[in-house]
Amino acid sequence: MAALIDAINVKRKMLFELDNVPYACLDSDISSPTARGGQTLVRLKMRNLLTSAVFEKTFKAQDKFKEPDLVLVPASYLYSDGEGSHFLDQESFETLTLTEKMVGNALDFLIEGALLQLHMYNGNPIGLQLPIFVELDVTRTEPGVRGDTSSGSVTKSATLETGLEIKVPLFIKEGEKVKVTTETGEFSGRA
Image (cartoon, rainbow, N blue to C red; front, side, top):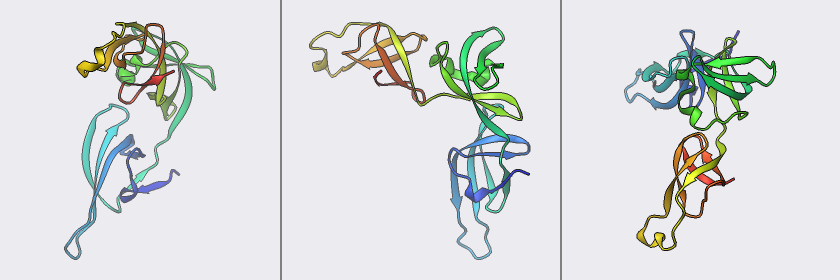
């Protein structure tokens, strides 16, 4: 039997199961009563990992959740087509397919062969977890012009090999590899 988690112990980024659906906690707020006999309530902002819907719900502190049968599997990105995006499970060497909705904007950071983690729920892929940083080649950017920094503009647009457009410092040139934060899609440094 899966371990039970009290609602009051659910913290940000924790995973739990409610009504046979896996959720990720985005935020939790505990409100203690001021009156005697009042119940402590826990307000959770949570994301449904199957539909990606985000909503808030209030629970009693002693409500219990199951730990989801959620496994992270190492995989590499193969390609995308009309059916979805295809990944190679690095343990079983099985090809797993995720729909466009499951992948979301992750294709902005994925090149062929990129390693990542797939979320498997009850043996089926339901989503993916990108690494914190990815390294991508700059395919197009304007050359930095000396004196541009005096105008206060110290960044310029650059298009990466995946088609993602980001702001980079003036010294970055075409053909260079840059490190990009997957959470925000921002330049993080040279690779």
